[in-house]
Amino acid sequence: MSWRIAVYGAVGAALAVLSLGTVGWAMSVAEPVPNQAVAVEEPEAAPLPVAPVIPADAVVKGSAPAIAAKLDLASDASLPQGNQIKICDVEVNGWVRSESIRLSDAGVGLSIQVAAWRAGAAASAFDQLEKGAQGCAEVSTSEAADEFRARVSSADGTWASGVRRVGDLLIATSASSGSTDPAQWVDRVLAAGQEVLKPRLATTCVDPTSARSNDHVARDPYSGQYTGFRVASPRKLEDSSVLTKAQIATIKEKQPESNWRAPNAVADPALAPIIVAPQSPPAPIGADPATATRGPAPQLIPIDKFVPPNTAEPSSDELKEPVVPAVGDGVMVAMVPAVDNSGPGCGWDFVGTVNPETTEAEMAEGARKAVIDALLKDTALQSQRMLDTLSWPTAYNTWVTKASIAKSWDSYRYELDAAKTKLATAKRKYDDSLLQWREGTLTPVVPVPDPAASGAVPPSSGVPGTDSGVTP
Image (cartoon, rainbow, N blue to C red; front, side, top):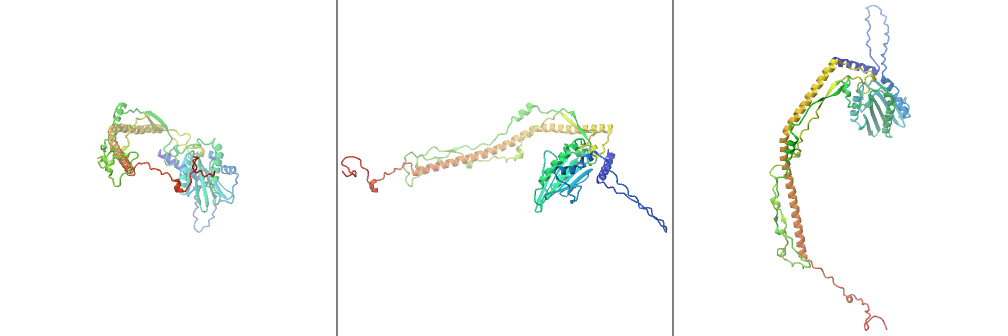
């Protein structure tokens, strides 16, 4: 199909020339005869070729002014009218029809352009603009559609732009302002653009909602990466595991476990707490705590008895349990060539793109090759799965060994920390009992104050013969 690619390239170049609307023509004039006057006639200017009428004309023509009208804005004749899509010095060409308008409103400069590409090519142009914008601006993208916005702020003001792809159309807008935020104008233009173009595309575009991932480049004869339209053709491909479920379950019964054991705990009499009875007096000054009554000695593991596992601790990457390779779904899918009647994006007819021609023999040969390629690929994967399944028991046992070592290290650290905590607790309890032994637990006697010492006269008891302080 190499001769067709050359033809497609020539047609693509012709479309690009027609889109620019200019063609250069070479002129030649006969040489004059010596000593003879020659009357030189001015050649007639060759007429410029007239671009053929295509469905995209009805969509693009008048679209930019229509968007401006929805925004209640009119074209500013004082501004230079451009006809390009350029963001961050990245300019995309190759459109077949384009219309632009320059506007201004309350200090905001605004440009709007609507351009149509050949079948499937607007997706690549959108990609170029989006990547270019990321080089100089803060870019936000939409997950719901092919749409992005770019923004740059500086001391001179704020610049914002946005692009929306609809089928094989791009709506591009750029706004700048020295005082206000122009981003709101970008939102308004893209929203108005979709309102204007949606009814226009309804009867002319094959798939206005087509996604970029819908093999646009592969179906575009002029992209340089053309492979043609392909459809899925499923074939049955039996697959089964070389190990039964029972065999797999038996192997997985072996689970990692720690082989490390902590030393035995022993009594530590030195940390046996002192028993201090209630109402005990303080210990005599200089008394030896060893002579005091002691409680049961705590059972502790000597820290110096801890010995770590004798095998190096494995890395985290070695501790991932190997999974039994899955069995295939029993279906092989070959992407076989098919006649591309509609074309990608808005389709062949939208901008008069040439529909690639293929013969039945070429289609049959392409289908055979696609099936063989898919079969070779899927059977190779199937063979690899079988080999991986056969080696899985060894990998699983290796994992159990390494995971057991890791569990041993975990046990060592856990038991060591627990032993240190118990030792600290025992020391604290002993220190508390020692302090209580030295200070005693007698309840202090609160002295009763002497009223005479304070000069106070006690009140009369009311008994005859006592001084009640009352004169009879």
